[in-house]
Image 1: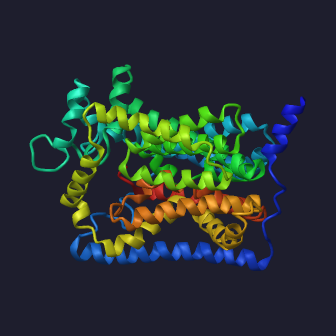
Image 2: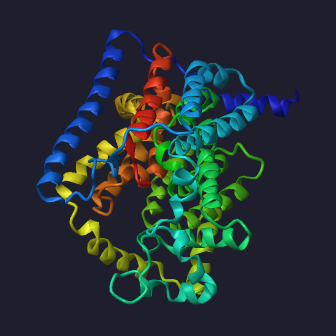
Image 3: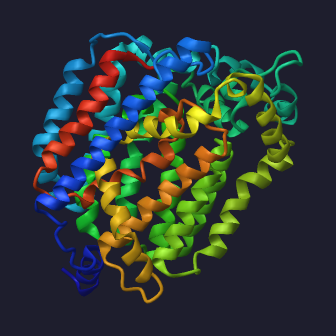
Length: 470
């Protein structure tokens, strides 16, 4: 091993990480936090049923999730059970022992297998091939983009319900970068729902790798390895394989990862990494309006790395996609204001803010899992000490991880309070929730497999008992 390689390995390992607090007190508080998450979901279900049965204003059949009761098994059931059992039994050991690059590839493969097997519980056609072809989805308008320039110049004319030919809900609800992705796949000979579904599944699985790369750069390799099994068995995988939000999550996650590499200078070309981060962030903003909040995580990365060096290339890269779309005739701000109008023309206008402002968090609890809830309890507990160590730069690796996950929680809070996310957040907030998952790495090894099993159980129960609609 060369001196440079040895230095890289030492830097990647980061500072020594003290073992998470064990004993009956911390363990009891972890279980109490998880129980509070269960209670939140139960209250959201009970209150939701009362409201929905009373006036139907929630616009969901199985509150707080957009789902309906439909107990079933399917072709993906054996595979989903096998992946979950394998990850629970061997995941922590594999994460601790595999060489780093091989671990990243293994986690990507395992994450894709988990997402794919959950989607296949509904069968190939119902679970994957049909999902992005329904009346609300992007593939319904592919033929309207034969002339891409004209479609972009007239995009805002079809957002609000009223004029002839208004866009389907998801096309109207997102900037055209989302639809153009599937137009591009179609032009490349990969048209149809099956290719679109697999695109979202394969890229969605890579988000786990992006988070691991970020954790290694910001907190060291130890915590990244501890987080790996929890990132693979994410309960929100139920929705990653059935919507384009998994694709959005991956683009946003790699934007954060590249900035972490640039800020920590753990790459040979930090300026190029920062430029790439900006390019992906710009694209993220043209995939979903709400994902502008990823800027909170980008800011957290710069704070944790204590540098402003990447800002120049980051901003330069972030301007590329917006300038290109603006020159092509699409006005992001005009479109966003029209989207707000469209939102209140539909379900957003009847769904009560007073319920969803807290029930959204119940959806997030189901998407993130109880291990994440317990981990966030530990993150919140270490936040005061982390903030005190921020300026002198004396934070431990665990405190740095805590601040990163709490930054993601801040983005969730902003999205929630905006009122533009009422229901369906189990799907929509995946790009934020994936950054909550590493909080589970703060839990002790004792009982670790139990927490992993709880994560898998949430996904398996939701997918087998409900028809989620996405």
